[in-house]
Length: 627
Image (cartoon, rainbow, N blue to C red; front, side):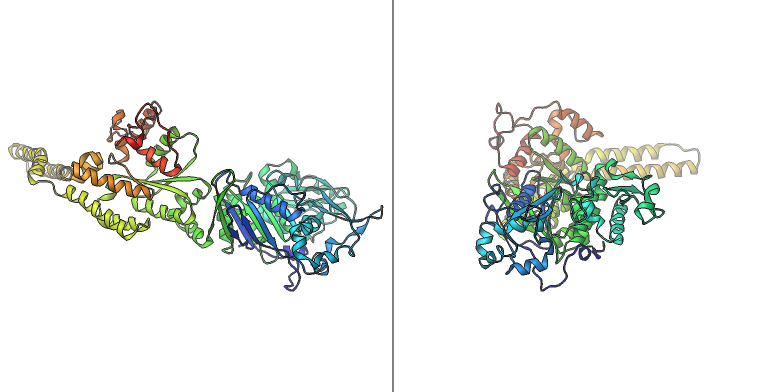
């Protein structure tokens, strides 16, 4: 666990519960859903779903008057706590005190919400012209007066674009001013500055940052493994500190990471918004920044994060369960859908070795996800779906077996992820497993009854092979066994030792023949190979009904039997030892058409996920009419 430590207190954050505290109470989204942000709120979802725009909407509403705001897109309205009197605000935030400038005007200077420059406010007499405003809280909230006058000092917005600039070399400015984050860092105790360096070192293999104060007019950050020999006095430190590299000359990853750490350390702002903290970071650093951000949220500071990173999400969840997670999806240009997820459920996925290794959480950042039985399945389906629908980005999750496919699908139902699962025909082989799968996918009792009866009808067909037919199929194996035994009995051996060795070798051979002969007489083996084609006409109708109903829940059964059977009509046999390589090579030569596999089957999957028709060749019959 990262220590929350003294950073908030050092930065001037009050721990007294009776003081006024600025805090978002609620957000009303463009689908009229109301959300109550927690100490830590995380916005997740696919690219271009509205995560970053939601942060921009919040900044507009909390830092500008209604006349100056840009039109909102995601957040239609928000509510925050207002102080009852000006004195309450002044007590909680003494930095808002205005002073007369050289021209005799009452002025306030602070950093912009984006922290990359001065944000001056010059105007009415302080405090006389401000106190009366607080007698009408709904008026000052409704016209944005409070946000315009004080919001810039209460809200911090760390964007992807400006984060790299926040900790660049900067002038120290006048003694009484704080024109940049490095000056704010300078004003903190040395122990707190050392903690900043420690956070960087934990994420970047021991590389620390240290504030270089040796030049009175300029502050800069230095990077190195060990600063223990640098004297504390800035003047004495000059010949030592200048030997270390400047942070400005380092990679974007460590600069972005440092920008977030420094900002959250020095900011005395109760609301901080962070867009894509994972930008420029590798997976370990993304998890580390997630842990750090979570450690800095609490009763005195709300943090709202928009992320497209599973690693950041894992880092956040590893540090705290007190987090509100909101998944955003885009419906059209004007409307989004929103779903609140429970942190406990996501933590359960993150901590499950099977789910974790299958990249299950990654699907939270995609519009649509397809779950396959294994790696070969997913690689083939991914290539085929890319040809079928090049404009759509599908996420593929590799499960381990059919039961795991439906378990992962059930998890996605909790999170609102649009998903489909693809399984081979032999998912119908074992009745208990079939019924358990139906339970995972939340079918009704009546539907489960129907699907169970249909499965039993197919199972009866597979298990009712006529004895004469079974004997006929076993005949070649039986003939081979008899010939081998006769050859052994008719052979003259030189001695008993050689005869014993030959008998043992024959026994191994006979066992192998029997083992191979057993599935030959098993119709399930034929169904696995040919699927629907191996059924009689009545059972084909039964399978069509069954597969149609399961497809409505997003579970698709390969109609040709198994994945490997989908390419047989294109000359790639299911027993080809290099099946995947041969199939992908052949696939590139094909044009998707409706009445050919694998397109006929995958078009059903695509249509179910997107609800849009027309990806296959119009010269052929449409999939829905292909029968």
